[in-house]
Length: 270
Image (cartoon, rainbow, N blue to C red; front, side):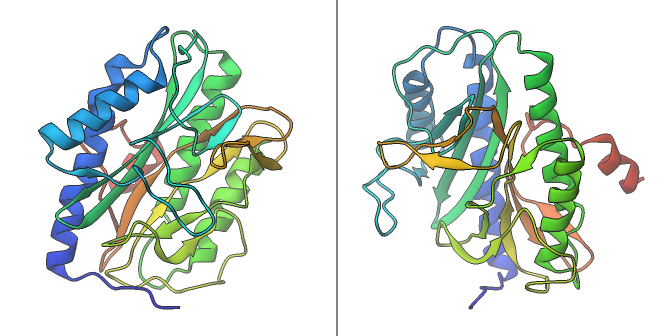
């Protein structure tokens, strides 16, 4: 396994790409309301990335081995859709939850982030799932510093989510990122502490837990991309791109409109 260690100049480029990806979500936020289609959200994002940011949406025509090219510029996964949902013309309904996943390429560097949105008035259960998934991502981020191991991140996320009665999707994981959309290492959201690769300064990867309200089993839809929960329970996901620094971590996918970190993060920083 070859993990690319980013230089200072590399990191500068990734900071820009990460901020731009987050700013796409900032721009979309007021538009995520009942009645809008994910197709319309995709067009807003596509035009903004190309025309305003003068960047490239990485998902568009992305085709890893065994896949048909992805046809849209963002991924939109609704309710029991776990990930890789393809935008379409179905209007969002009051109470839906939707993950919007954005990856921007700027000057050759990738920035990758996603957020959950509750459309209109969501149920207490749906809001709790989204909030606890957000906190599980940050529990993992908080483990990032030199000398820790990837298994420490996964174990922390898994323990937190499962203690709340949720389950962790295991077939998909976070990943290294840089000039390529997906690089080594793979970042599992479950596992044993003290296992897998040791973290060293200059590593950049995503942490993006997918958390189900019901069982963890999933299946692929006929479009070859969309993943859903087998039991049709709700699923949520949040994602940040994270740099290992000399003393801890830096989240590269933050912008003016990013949701604030949970209280346990801000308390630790004081």
